[in-house]
Length: 304
Ligand SMILES: [Zn+2]
Image (cartoon, rainbow, N blue to C red; front, side):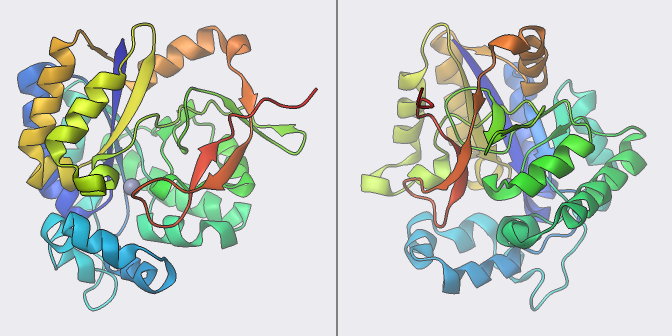
């Protein structure tokens, strides 16, 4: 049984505080991971707009204690406070990620912009977002990133076009059960998609009274021999208030016999047998504990 850790870094506080803490825990346990960093400005405060547009936001704020998780300052970036640059605020910290043997990929340029506005963006505008993220990566690392994870699991046909044009080796944009090539209305994109297969801690917290320890139990319980699961964690959540729980998850999964794999290495295996990777549709769907919709793999069999 294998587990890939996808670590999304959405905010400045997640980058500056969460990433160093996670690097330390991962090094202590000898666990490799795949980090995806939102390269541009932190506009988290604008996510407060979702408060007015998505049902269940307040409920979730209360349940997860979002102000405690993210800090009030983060919740004002891009509204009352200007949005600070994330990656460029600490180039040495960004370089420490691959130097420690982890994968570093792009989590977009402006996370909130992608998450809230993707459905209205043309291919050209999405290409601009990707280019701006890639530019920052190249300036700091000296080479382009080869992997991309869509902010907020939001993906559209236009985004697929833009990501194919940007020649990523693979992407991790959606929620689903196993890797696939996205296909919609008689089109197949030559873009290997490795979806997040497990629920996230922030979705599960408080659902039916669940605590972080219950989440860990559930994750460890679903791991099956012969399967590769993808768990997304958030640097601002598991790297801060829930660091001890994350560390316990690593220990329990390792004790259970898990092999840790980076997404990039999983992608390389999949490309070796790409003919076996199915072509499947994606569609907006809802998930327990998450406000709004995310893009999901459509698992229904195609009718004959
Ligand atoms: Zn994110």
